[in-house]
Image (cartoon, rainbow over all chains, first blue to last red; front, side, top):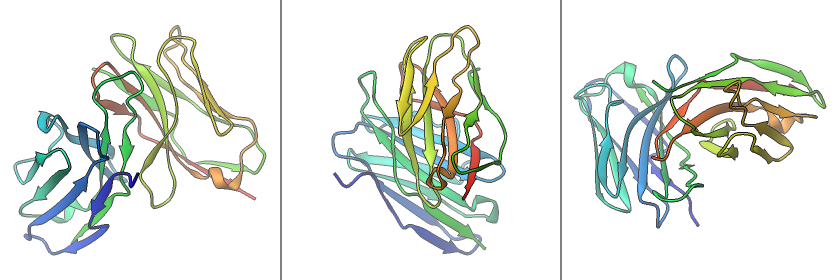
Length: 115
Length: 111
């Protein structure tokens, strides 16, 4: 299995630009999570989806952030406009919804730098 | 609300030393407990888990026991290697899928 796939792996952009991060979950998984990791704030859950439906977006910092999951095999996290404080590593994770041992599998992350 | 507290790092050890990372949690019910590990430049990987009180999770020489009476899930390894250098995250989860993570503990093992 290919695991969770994220693209791009690295993104450098200028303040004010739109940034789109992409995620392909593991086939057969029906829960998807977006996290942000920074030195200052640690690992934060931004939003998660069950069966393509957003369940909890309380971690989304502000209206500049939006996430979509148009189908079971693809999700995007968009930042518009981007700001330097958005610089972080963004992780996508997926899991099966049911079952006791529904482990979350993490992708390699996208390192975002906003200048 | 639910929360997870880990000892702050970094923890610096020599190879073959004993490692303990403390983790305590606050929760209203009986969550499942997890340890995740993040190696440099990578995403998090599940290291071990326990789903009920007194369960012991183990993997790669690491162990942790779910202690309901002390609301703890401390991670231990008897003899660390340089390759164990990483950041370790304690986490809890209820029946839903949402994980609540601790702040992470960086471990550095020197040869």
